[in-house]
Amino acid sequence: MLSAQILSEFRQIVGPRGLITAQNQLQTYECDGLTAFREAPAAVLLPETTEQVQAILRLCTRHKVPFVARGAGTGLSGGALPTPGSVVITFSRMTRILNIDYANHQVTVQPGVINANVTAAVAGAGFFYAPDPSSQTVCTLGGNVAENAGGAHCLKYGFTVTHVLEAKVVLPSGELVTLGGKTPDAPGYDLLGVFIGSEGTLGIATEMTLRIVRKPEAVQVLLAAFDSIQAAAQTVSDIIAAGLLPSAMEIMDRLSIVAAEAAVHPHYPMCDGLLIVEVDGPLAEVKLQAAQVLELCRKNGATETRHAVDEADRLLIWKGRKAAFAAAGRLSPNYIVQDGVIPRTALPVVLDKIGQMAKAEKLRVTNVFHAGDGNLHPIVLYNRENPGEEDRAIDLSMRILDLCVETGGSITGEHGVGREKQCSMSYMYAPVDLETMQRVRRAFDPENLANPEKLFPTPRLCGEQSRGHYVPHPVEASGIAEVF
Figure (cartoon, rainbow, N blue to C red):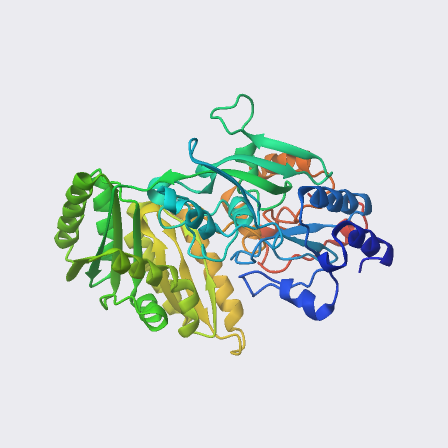
């Protein structure tokens, strides 16, 4: 619990309407999109300016108060989960697009700007912002930068890190620094690259300059239905092997199709493996690529294929895909959206193994994922009311990540590590790798106040112990031993 003096100082910084301390209101901030972990913060702060963020962090550092930055709370790995005694700094009052520079293809925004609002702001001039997470109509750019968010079109256009040119960052000390630059290839260390994807453990971005992209001359979306998800996955590998680079390639299985149809009615063909492919570019190139993709789909046994007939149809197809995570609630009262990456060529084998693992646990897993990147999103369905089922669901989702690592992949593609996967870090990295990362973090945050208990296994060997909530070791709690 924070003292009355500290709360008074916070109130002086953000005003009475910028400070939340009522318990019933704090519950809104006790978790993000990963609801299996919950912890109410000691207070919530709603700054309106960079100067207020600086003052908040100076105060946190002076009183050793941990802080957690939060956008819209749509994260799926517990990255915005409060820790005991921490304050949440949320950016629902910093939502301005500060500048649009069409000549240099740049937009400067505050962290609370919703992802889709950037494209909405520049679409009239023929531009768009490429990173498009499924939650893009509600998620914010500050969170996208913290997690290095991706999306369907990152296959061709790249993840968030490809599109951030410059960020003004408040360090835990309250110091304001500028990372990167509005012109390319700045000399020195790529500290902006280090910051993007650091999950709020290095500081808080209060202003970001993003790259925007010109709309292509033509866009075409194709649907192909297969009798198995493995056949759809093999088609993805064949398309890439043929030298094609679609702007997006997504796969949905039967369960996810059923859920999406019930939610937004995208009129998908009912099948066990639905492949969605989008190609864009000059009109002649799009026509040629679409024909080649269609041929490869038929070669792999597609039972039905069709094109989007117009722009409204194209948007409806994507609406169904982007609604798939939320629509999983129609399949089960509880679910975990997992996020791992594997080599594209391993898709058929890994998807088959996931099915076997789910069957052995007597749980259902539905798959909808960015197939072109090898970025899996298995959704583990369960009912929290059934004794032990939530624990089995969490364990299954973690073992799926182990499988990703064993096939040469990663424990995350775009959702981040957060609280959920911190114990999986030591399955992927050697101790010396983790220690090197800790040294980088401590260079920014020597007091371990910026989003603590995230990203790294604590204690260092927790990945070798049973997974679960972190419990401080008595030696650590007494102050004898240091925990990064």
